[in-house]
Image (cartoon, rainbow, N blue to C red; front, side, top):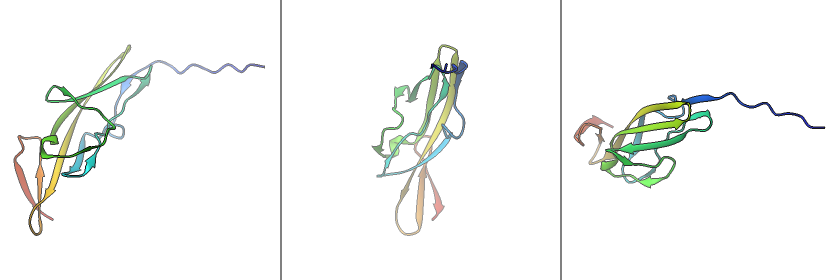
Length: 114
């Protein structure tokens, strides 16, 4: 006796704030991973870039200030494309009670109290 398995309906790629958070906080010197994934049927191909250069998702790497910025993630299947910008903030601690944040605006530091 064979039971047919229903086919999943075709679906364009999609990324939401849960699967591809638009803002991510990393800490300098720690191993961090760009978190982004996409859904769709057929499963989409996901590519993220920073400054036009490929940047893999799901691969832990030691963080430096140069990782701060905006990443463009694009998911594609035969039905379409979804795009999500992801801003990565790199935090570092210097001195007593100081916390610095490196943002996507050219590596300038912004001081906040810890």
